[in-house]
Length: 571
Image 1 (tube, rainbow, N blue to C red):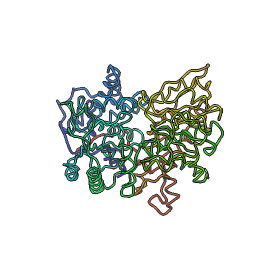
Image 2 (spheres, helix red, strand yellow):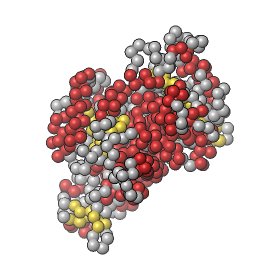
Image 3 (cartoon, one colour):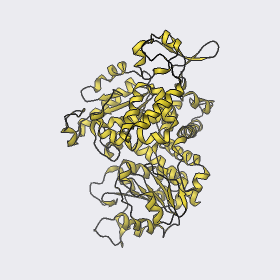
Image 4 (cartoon, rainbow, N blue to C red):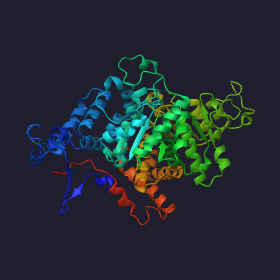
């Protein structure tokens, strides 16, 4: 049965209903089945709920009004986060209906930036079980855990080892907030039924001494596992995942940069998996750059790119831009030549000792810097790169707040009338530049996008909507397309297709106002549009595959769940 019709049946008259086998408190405590005060008189009688609920049934609309009022009454972002998570733990249908109606208001609460604080305070704010916590001691028992887990048909797993949470670093067991939040976005965007979503935290210890010193910390109070021991643990986890969740897509999330690349490259052929920090980030940024080239009436190949930050996200951005350049017909060498990456030591040159393997493909020959005036021998800063190279696209993936300076951006104006400046790091405090400043530095000429949400900026009588380069415009669509097509490997081409589709979705009205991303309230439409593009690409590439002769629109619709109450019938 398709996910969009998850546990739905139709009677002889074509009326849709949901068969339910549990009753009483067990039904009220099942977050995927609970309707709370909206159970009808007939359902209360049939499912032994009489006396367990206030006597007057409430409509779905009245429930939504009530819980929205409760949300508004919370006094801070973190209290609103707690309120919504508690609602999700009680009644998933009501939670998703509420958030979908107020998604621009609530997405920053259930995910970035508020989820960062929730992860930091996880042990002190823990409310209710959700997902699996895997350790070296229990990894071999994942099959037993799976038998006791509520969801029996898992399609999406988001897993983290919590070492690189957002821009906050090692948060130990608290990183579980990230998979929970990401999977909520899968449901909101791609309609993946919440019972088919599984968040997993790999507790391999923590090097965060504050957590180790905290008697309330809920994770293993030990230093982080490393080296061969860590690799062996990940290998066991992947083997258990393949065995017990054979139809699931695995999303690696917020691993350290080296482990992120290692895990992805080692296991991407073993099960359909991807790393959102690498591939999702790269894909959404490429989409924004494509949109900006439309505004400039130029091509990707006419730009020179500086990616400030060479971690998982930064190199992922470079990889996707490289793929976009190749799609335009640029040669491999020219594409490489147009992309510069910088880390904490400046421009990545190939003569650096101990250079990380994943950075080598973008390392430039140091001879390129001959004749540059460098403050420190052998190193070139961002400013020194821009002073000597016609950079037209500046992309921030560093997590260093305020790293982009007025001098950097004004120098770019010597190379292009419309510089692209994307300070993408989040949370907001880590943003490389404030949009308002960038517009001032360029007299409103810059094309700006950010990773965190920002309010509109008014400058010189013009109102600029700041597009948010949020991975949520990419990863739910990729997951949905993978499920629908049943592919065994998630490819770079799927992400490149997603980039061009997302750029195509952005309206001309938005582009005319300098904005390169859609609004969050369009998330579901965006996800369907991007998933369709990926599925069409798969269908064309493999005409004899499982999508042969299929109506893609219908396939997508059948896999997308809607948060509505269906009538229940006792079985």
